[in-house]
Amino acid sequence: MNRQTTHITQEQIAAQLAYCARLHAANTALDHTPLAMVDTYGCQQNEADSERLRGYLSQMGYGFTEDPFQADVIVINTCAIREHAEQRVLGNVGALTHSKRSNPGQIICLCGCMAQEEHVARKIKESYRQVDLLFGPHALWRFPELLWRVRTGGRRVFAQEEEPGSIAEGIPAVRQGGVKAWVSVMYGCNNFCSYCIVPYVRGRERSREPQAILDEIRALAAGGCRDITLLGQNVNSYGKDLSQPMSFAALLKQAAAIEGEFLLRFMTSHPKDASQELFETMAASEKIAPCLHLPFQSGNNRVLSAMNRRYTREKYLEQVRALRALMPDIVLTSDVIVGFPGETTEEFEDTLSLIEAVGFDALFTFIYSPRAGTPAAALPDPMGREEKLANFQRLVRRQDEISEAKHKAYIGRTLRCLVDGRDEHGLTGRTPGNRLVRLEGAEELIGRFIPVHITGANKWSLSGRPALEEGPEG
Ligand code: 5AD
Ligand code: SF4
Image (tube, rainbow, N blue to C red; front, side, top):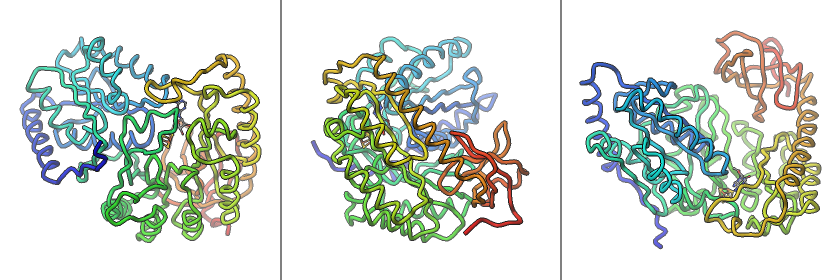
């Protein structure tokens, strides 16, 4: 197969914007402003994709709603990482028969990772006839044309290009994050961890040109964005495929040199590629948040090898040591899978002992979910659900204690936090290491970095009060 990245040209994007203009004209002729609803599942990459779908929809003249009964167009941006996520989407798509019955002209679109899966597409075609348009991540840049075909052709449209992947610059975006934003630096994944569907639905690794990324960050910073997360399935292999290869650490260094008051974060890092150069770059810049999401998946070497992770427990622990030698206060988070096919309870104990040895600030814990077409789905899986669940609960309980103890250690400190929004309990903020802080204070503080005196903590979050008179420690 040809593994070359397809670069979508500016002419091709202009042609899509011309479809937006046609749809805009059709929408202007209506007696009401048509509304669109974009419902996003899964990871931040999907959130970033939804910002572009909203960008296109906005150019077509749609307003936005979160009520399916008000919507003329519904776009469901799906996640395929675990079966549970898929079941939720299918349940919600099933329920849309009601909104469609009350508004027969309603257009329902399903996109994202699930849409790229063969068996899902078949199921939607046959059993979910309320879905008018289905397209995978590779076809997102052509959404205006596809929607135009549905609106004018009166037929269902299915677009699931099988391709190694493309890069499209210049798609408009409507950002929702307020003071936060995501910037994709690359797409796809080459790692083929044996349990994971991502490489099959998102294609091969391909990096955006550094100039395009840096321009985007510059514009965000100038527009008041304070917290910018660089996104990729494995950011540490950024740049290997560029005509002038560059490392992720080098990109990060250039991004950190951009003027403005903002913090840079990034995810996800694969332990096989996280480098000393990266750690040194993080330690050297105040603009790079002192936190790292470094998924370990399992603490047992046999399981790691069966997962095709290509590092050992020892190498992982060595990386944590090297990182902490440079940044003793680094906030470390990770992903872990319990119940991988063939994992014994004895092997699972190695996962428990690894979280003990590292002391993560937070952990994202998952029970293994077989994904059709991945190598792990074909492995014998003798352990019963109950034993997996018992192991999972032991892990969660222990991590809860560790997280709570880590959080309690913040009490009495004053940290420079970004006030990033408000919810029903009051203002919310983030420590430099991205821990959630609840605080009292006026709305005007949103978007500002302020010193916060930490007064309380539980396993999920911290609480505190603005300490504008004190200034942060250090
Ligand atoms: N089952 C359970 N968890 C999975 N993940 C990825 N694939 C699966 C699967 N098939 C988890 C990994 C990954 C996170 C995003 O989701 O821990 O890091
Ligand atoms: Fe999936 Fe592994 Fe790629 Fe992450 S690195 S997206 S877990 S295949």
